[in-house]
Amino acid sequence: MPVSSTADEIPSDAPPCSPGQLDRILGPEHRALTIGILAVVSLVAFEAMAVATAMPVAVRDLHGLRFYAWGFSAFLTASLVGMVVSGDVSDRRGPLLPFVVAVTTFGIGLVLAGLATTMWLFVLGRAIQGFGGGLNIVALYVVVGRTYPDALRPRLFSAMSSAWVLPAIVGPAIAGAVADALSWRWVFLAVPPLIAPAVLLMLPHLTGLGAATEGGSVRRRTLPAVAAAVGVALLQYAGQRRDVVSLWLVVGGLALLAPSLPRLLPRGTLRIRRGLPTTIAMRGVLAGAFFGAETFVPLMLIEERGMATALAGLTLTGGAVGWSAGSWYQGRPSTTLPRHRLIQAGTGLVAVGIAVTALGLWQAVPALVAAVGWVVAGLGMGAAMSSVNVVMLGQSREAEQGFNSAALQVSDALGSIVLIGVAGAIFAGLHNDHGGNAPVFLFIYGLMAAVAVAGAVVAPRVR
Image (cartoon, rainbow, N blue to C red):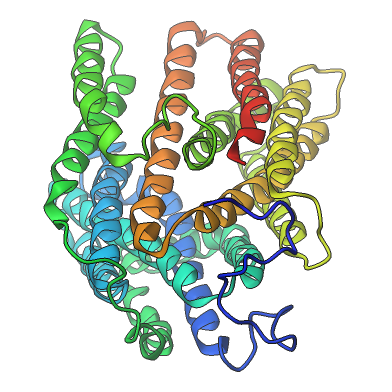
């Protein structure tokens, strides 16, 4: 299905949208659903930011420091399976069931992690959270595709991006205060009761969203999803080792991913075929380049510029603010730049932002320049990522919205894992414990900027 060439063109088969509601997502018809979606996204965002802050305290308390990374890996690995299952069920039965299971499962995982007495129970809780998180994000995308007119989707995705800003700013501070004053457990246990009101706002709007297609089997893509998740876990674990075993783990991971990924992505995605396949691939390119670089921004500022940890962390907050601003720009009704150009320009800004951040490696350059660069990179991500979401829904028939939304998330996760893993391997192999690591950071940033430049070159193929 072709995509509108400009932000304000509406396909002839788009759901009706009255002039009074065209420029707002809080009109009477959509208000409760919009508030519910944004509340759920905000709570998930807060939990993501808070967990990253509380994790060191939790693993020390559970005597599981050597398994620190598994608290994150278990979440991401299980989320891949949840994404695919949610896409299949949403296409066959509608988004209501996966959404309800998502919030329930996410809440159970939070409680289990918060009450865990051993590290393995904690990791299990994180895995259950991840499965629920994967179910949730795909179900929300399908809800957007089924409920909101084409003209309102850019503004809603902009609002969803903005919902991450406040948690990014206050989440770590609140989590740290709660962990210090009470216990790290309350970072997990306090969230489930807060989700219930948002769910109650959304449910009346989801009950009528039934199946979009008949036939098929939910299980036909579950097995490849599990294989891909295990392959991803092996690649993550390989990145944490520094011995010959890591090579075998990489081989095993790739052996699982090679046959399973083609079944989880639209045909031609790995070959950057024009149209939907490129749209899906761009999500992975953007996520990989941005997060592959972001992972090392605070560390670079601390090691090379002697910046305080809290101040270095504020650089990431600047990126989140820039992301929100870029997403806001692409969602303005007056924005007439074609979507493929928004994606191209946004990807280019990511490359520029990474390059400017790398300038912070030179002592003659004020460290503030690195922070400014990361705001620019965030600006590009906001414009490009939200536009990718809009284009994907515009290219998807209703019966394919679940599968394509899941594919988008799989691409995102895979791109992040691969490029963060590559960056981590470069850092581990070249890092000198006695300092003087500016060339190592420069190598990583150069590689991530090159990936973003390549993405900007192929971005017009989303048409």
